[in-house]
Length: 278
Image 1: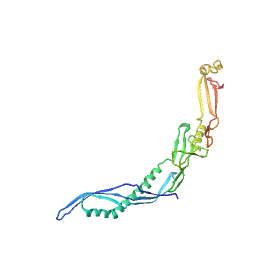
Image 2: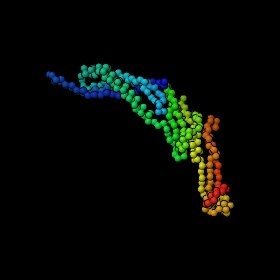
Image 3: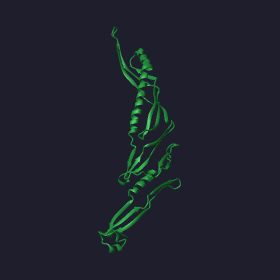
Image 4: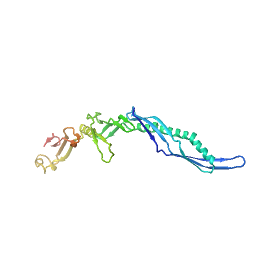
């Protein structure tokens, strides 16, 4: 199992309370004041098991949790030395145990409830784009590896054509990205399907088909025979279409290369007649 252990040693907290006492019998003396205590040292020791849950999100289980604070810096207002010593005695025994239990229970609730609830709320399907470019991206967690030294989380990253429900056929190939300002040993990988699959979706949904409308009078200056053959208001259309799916590749030698193969046709579309390619 992926078990991660650690200790939280920078937890700062303090305990404060007011006190008052009065002697009923003669001589009738009384006093009051405040008491505060802060831990000098201590830690919360944790052991977590990290894996993949049934919902496809990472899953964190608490294996063990133990708060250990025992040495306190105590301040008591008032000049009753025996009361000061009583507080020290209480903290070294009963109160320190109570505080440790409270801290342990609090950390347990945070991990088993709050963190689990947050992780469970992370969506496993993301929607990107709109119209014919819309994609569904399955980002469920496929694998988790964790030790005290590193944490590795792998996502499924499966892309669907929202319009047809088809899965992108391109397979992941990781592209290493090096960032100089990060410490040595840091490396970021990007899946090339982040580029090739959107191109696949757009091509199959006809996004790379474009038609520009104009009139014969606008083209007469460039192609004079059009003015003789067609009325000035005859629609002239330019049809630009991708003849094959665009490709995206990357390698160390050439870098990133995206290729489009487009075909353009110009034709006249007189009303009530068949289109005539020019």
